[in-house]
Image 1 (cartoon, one colour):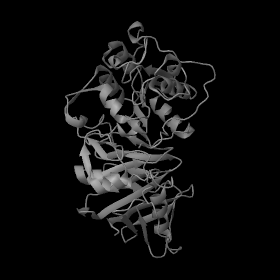
Image 2 (image 1 turned 135 degrees about the horizontal axis):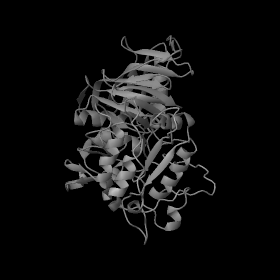
Image 3 (image 1 turned 180 degrees about the vertical axis):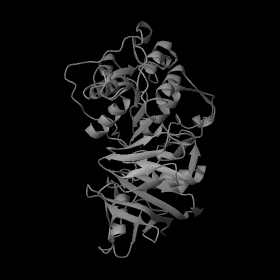
Image 4 (image 1 turned 135 degrees about the vertical axis):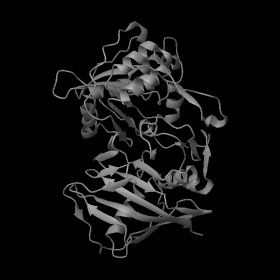
Length: 436
């Protein structure tokens, strides 16, 4: 059973279509002058919803000369989506497939003043004349077009499709690849990443991490059963790819739809299983704009981003202690170079505890089989830091066994209200145990 996709949304493009001729027939435009700034990543947690602040940030970072005559040129990579079954599906931007998604995103970025190049790569050839194929990742004309861009945008879908199409990996059981090489298209993407901006939504966020990239799973099953290297048939089981993704963001595991879909449990499990001390998880319609040189970032959009710190965690069977969780809202900043910390933004005010105690919560990890909740653990954390007792609990929807999470505000916890009126917190203590 899979979560519904929310990385793709409706956007009216009128009657205009962005047509992509065969790459070998196109003379690639000259590479534009590099920006005189650090390379950046824009990590969007899912459900972009045409958020103007996020889109403008990407276009601005891709602009090679600011107020000068040149324009941002963004290569649109949508290979994480499934292939179009028919020419009609490929040409309809309201459909959800690699070719259609590229039309959608191209129109979206063009409406913000950027030029675009639709990268014609996906996982399969599904009809005669299909312009989106795996072979295009080896095409030198496609690579030249990508290299001529000032930014790259990765659409949503399944991050393993990016691995299968943009890498050439040695065979491994369950696709638990540990030995991969770049295709020419991926080499070109890296050249843009080194001087411009790489942005992605949902799977397009997750693929930007390095080793041990998550490939699927739900929090309850992850905590109960642990992590398995590879791409698993059971979408609720926690899988990960040892080789990882593109490696544009290092030092942390990445996850999308984070507190939106209750992915805290799977993130803690994977970090502990693979020896990574930190996880950066981003909520829907939210982005972390990250300077890839300094590791400094800012949160923009509608919700927030989480840092899970397991560097001092101890797990025994189904119990873990020593986990710390920080949640930064829009306007706050993130530092991935210095113990993955967050800091309050301008105009923030300190939260003064003393409110009502947080009520116990059912379905804390927003189970896919539950009532369809969202942001439940985030909401509990915000209630805990403002409460008089500073403690709150929640249990899993699933039973046999049922797990209980306890959130505790202690002397190391800080909390503030942002200028936008949202509660952020740093170093909230997290403990998970068998509730039975």
